[in-house]
Amino acid sequence: MPVVECDPEEARERLTEAGVEVRDGNTDHELWRASHAGSTLVAYDGKVVVQGGDPQRAVALLRGGGGRAHVYFDGACRGNPGPAAVGYVVVSGDGIVAEGGRRIGRATNNQAEYEALVAGLEAASDAGFDEVVIRGDSQLVVKQVRGEWNTNDPQLRERRVRVHELLREFDDWSIEHVPREINDRADDLANEALDGDRN
Image (cartoon, rainbow, N blue to C red; front, side, top):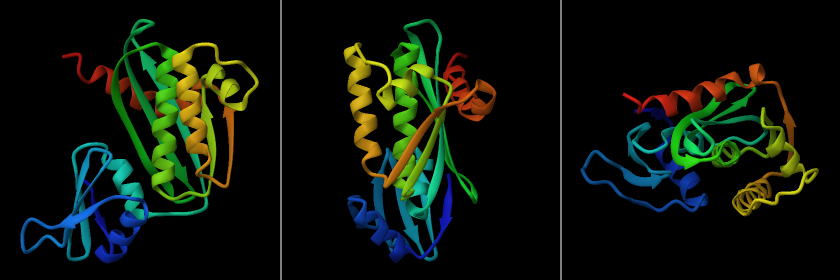
C-alpha cells in the first residue's frame, strides 16, 4: 500500500487535470478520495494513500513529471495462446517511476507483448512525461509500431492503434528492439505475475 507524501491540494489538482473524479472523504480525517486504474486514493494531511488495483499507475500520476522516461515492456505466455501476463518498467533520471506486472487471461505471446507496451505507456502518460524512449525484446511489436512491418492480425492491429493513440500524448517518442537481458526487469515482472497464481 504505497503512501505518497505530498500536498493533497496539489495532488487533487493534478488528478482533476488528468480527468480523474475527486470526491469528498468518508471520514473527518480524509480530505478527499479518488479512483484511478482500479486503485483507491485517499488523501490525509501531507500524504495520499493508494490501495488496490494498479497502485504504481496511481502513484506515477500523483508524482507528476515532465521530461523523458524510458519504458521497458515484456509479455509472457504459457502456450501460444495460453495463460498470459504483462510486465513494464518506467524509468527516469531519478530511477524507477512505475513498474508493474499482471495477468491478462488467455492470449498469444504477441498479444501479451502489445498489452505490456500499452500498460507501460499508460503509466508513463499518467506520470506526465513529455518524451518516451521505448525498449522491448519483441521485434514484431517494435517493427509494427514503427510501421516497418504490416499488422495483418485484426487483434494486433487494434492494439497497435491503441499504442499510437497513447504515443500522441507525448511530444516525442522512439521505440527500439533490445536483447532480452536488457529487458530483464520487465520480463521478471511478467513472469512473476504469470507464475503467482499457479499454486
